[in-house]
Image (cartoon, rainbow, N blue to C red):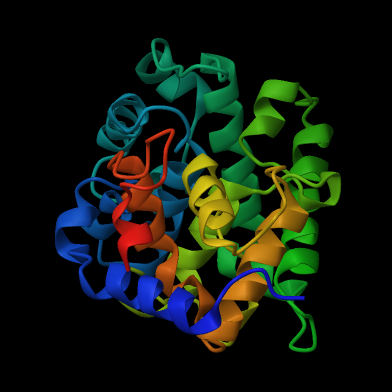
Length: 276
């Protein structure tokens, strides 16, 4: 049984979408970083690094991503493929962020490097396990992550903090940052790149964070309070009722509505969403 009014929900979501200044939001979002590049491979690598570190306060994680990409110069792809730990070690001695140490960052770059050498691109690796009949990208994402884990295990990289950078939906993680990366690569509208062809937008799963969770509960999009993979899928499936071919159309407007603290009151009666 539905716990929301579909007509009213559509009205709210369309209002948020139509009022969203996407060009302005790029500068407040980690997608700012891959937008600096033109090559698909550079966009892919910069996007993967930026999305993987996009946790915590925006100003803090953007500062770290900025430092890493500045070291990489004009081509993140070329830098990572030719990354030499001994040669480049000095550049990363002070780069760490919250749960992730200097060693985690170095290990992350090496694992990406091994992946690119073997598969030529992250797109090739992901598509290797994606099937058109899949309900969503969940299975392909699990296989994608497992490949990184196998590469890291062969290099004796098994720390929990390293794996935090690449979570796994099989363990019911919402995989917010990985789903964010996939949205950027697959969705081809607004700020997203759509450079990975052959995977339709309706296969994506929403990047679930505290903002999406809170607003989704408020609007009746979900009743699940846990921020996990099942909740992310449920929210996505509800959004498909409104926009079947492109459910993540509303992700950025919803997320930044929460980030802006417009949805930060203990009482919802004054919230702009409730006035519609």
